[in-house]
Amino acid sequence: MAHHNRLRSVWNRVDSGGALRAKGGLHRAPPAWQEWLSDTGSLTKKIELAFNQRLEVIVLADELQNVLPEESYLFNKSLQRCRVREVLLCIQGVPVVVARSVIPTTSSSGHNRLILKLGNKPLGAVLFASTYGLKSKTVRDIARLNRRQAIWRACQKKYPDLPPQLWARRTIYFLNGHPLLVSELFLPGLLLIPPPTANLL
Image (cartoon, rainbow, N blue to C red):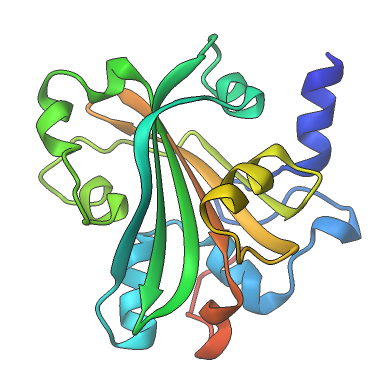
């Protein structure tokens, strides 16, 4: 139970309309960030439209790794090692997002095995492709991360220039009925353009 409470003290649930449920001031993102954090569409497409540029994907890691306890917890089952894909999303060489995807073995088998051969394609382009079996998002949390959080330290190992504090969101998607966890850490470069329009309730 203590573990559960610790997770909730960092991550705050976003409801189906995109509004933050948390009432504490610490986790209320500034408007410029909140619109990115709460949007329910494809982040890949939104970034490309905002910058009017193609998104570049730099693969930092795509391998079997130990899963963080807070990630395993979200799957409601014990996960130890599974496929973890970490990428840096850039616009014209400027990093804008560090994304970490946790893909359980059962989620990358069968038809998904071919779909998830990503190379340097962004995972979002696959998840939101109309031809695939993406279903509703069952978990969407946001947090203000710093060095105290395990996921910050894990991403900083792959991207040493990670800011000491930043806003992030994490979402569980279902691809053909199988769960994937995508965590997106937003970098200062994302605010070099006006924030996207979002319908926040």
